[in-house]
Structures are given as C-alpha cells and as structure tokens.
Length: 355
Image (cartoon, rainbow, N blue to C red; front, side, top):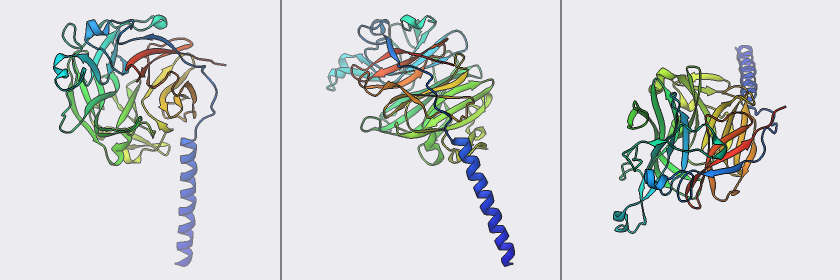
C-alpha cells in the first residue's frame, strides 16, 4: 500500500508538472518585436470644430469611445458612450448639458487619411437617439464595449455601470448583449447577461474578432487594471452563453468562464482586436497604465507579445479607449481615441513596420 501511494504521488507530481509546463507554454508572451512607430492625430470626429457637424446633424456636443465594427453591408457602425447635448430642461437640475447614455453613427468613408466622416445615424433627423435606456435606480449608465455583425444581425456588448471611481476605476452590475435587425436603428436586449461575479467578472468589457464563422470574445474585468481572457463560439450561438468555450491553460473548456486564464497581461482597459493584412498577424490595442499598448499574435489565442507603447500616457493629455478601424489597410493603422479634456473623439493613425 505504501509503495502504491508513493507511485501515485509521483504520478500526480509528474502530471502536475506537465500541466504547469503546458500552461506556461500556452500563456507565455511571444517575442516583442517593434512593429509600429508612434501614433499621431488625424482629425477630431465629434464636437465643436470637428470635421463632422455632430452638433447640428446629431445633437452631439460631447461624447467618447467610438466602438467600431463592419456591418457586413459596406458600412462602419460606431457606438459612442455617454453623450452630451443642449437641453434647456437640464438647467433646472443644475446641469449645463443633457446626458444620454449611448448613440450610434454610421460611416461609408474609406479614405481615412483626412479623417472619418459620418453619413447617417440611429434616430430621428437631427438627433442621434439613446440606444439603450439605463435604469437609474440601479445603474448610472449603460456603456458600449464591443460590436460585431453575426447571424444577419448587429450585436452590441454593453456594461451596466454601478459606480464611477477614480480615473480608470469603475464598478459594473453586469455586462450583456443587445441585438439589432435594422442596422442599428433599434436594439433589444438578449438573454445573455453576465452578473459581475465569479468567472463572469472576467468578461465585463469585451472586444470581438470574427474568423470564418467563429467569433472570439476577449474580456476584461470592469476598469482598466485587469488581464485579458478569451472565449469563442460559433456565430450562430452568440446569444447562447452555455455554448461558449473558454481558453484555459492552452485548451478550450465549455460553459465555464471561471476556467479562463489570461491571454494578455494586466493592466488592460478598453480593448480592440483585428487581423492585419500588412503585418500578417492579429493585432490588439488596449489601454494600459503607461498609454496605449499594441500587441501582435499569430493566432487569436496567442501567445501575444507583451506589447509596445504606441501612444504614451497623457500625450495627448487625458487620452483613452483605442478602437481599431476595421477598414485600416496597408502600413497605416487607424483607430478612434477619446480625450477627456474637452470630451471628444479623434481619429488617430499609427505607422506599421515589417521585416
């Protein structure tokens, strides 16, 4: 019996060591080649002095984010966060601006060298409407974090913000999915909510990547200080959380978000992921504590490089939330970038290098 127990302990130890080595190989960052220069500003997209008349056409004085995705029909859909407009009633409550939680603009502009122009919006003429109404008894706002076209629909992942803390820190109630069958004009919540707890805590903010009929979903906890986790599903199952698989120590585990292990390091905030033809790699942009971090990988699950800073922190001052433009081509990567001072969204460009 003693020998049997000894052999069993040895076998378990060897198995544990092999698992640890496999896990390390699966999550170790790849070599960190410098594949880009420093980003620079192309144009202001929203607000006073912007290349788009967002005040006159959409009643958008100030806003942030600019989460973009290809709708599959020759348009880019762009979702924005909390949005300001002038409303005399707000003065009665001691506020200069009236706030609505989320709006959507569309673009067909493929010449991004001089900026990104918007061509239409969700809402009535002259007013980009609120897409999803928050319950102010339970949440401060509802904020878009990622969008994708799948199953002939448009999908928007959102987070319910419970509390805004110091810069880069906030708490959510849940993250969830909404769907639109009319190109973003109207949205309906899908029964695919993730309460902020357990394994679902890892997917309170998400970025989508579509490869064939597989949708990859990169998740981070609320705020800008967590690691990045990965799930995948067939696009036909995007509304069914029980069919999601989670990347865990180099393998895929079904219907268990708690099993997900990091594929990119912390701290990472607002994230976007895309395939880049010029580099021949998958790329990601994420908000880190030292600025915007660019990472690359040969496969959606990685290993991802540890990354390089392409927009230093506070240069421009108070910048955050880099979202890749899906139509970026050649050796220039375009992305939206929010600047808190002035509360507007800009288009940025990033030169790419290859061997």
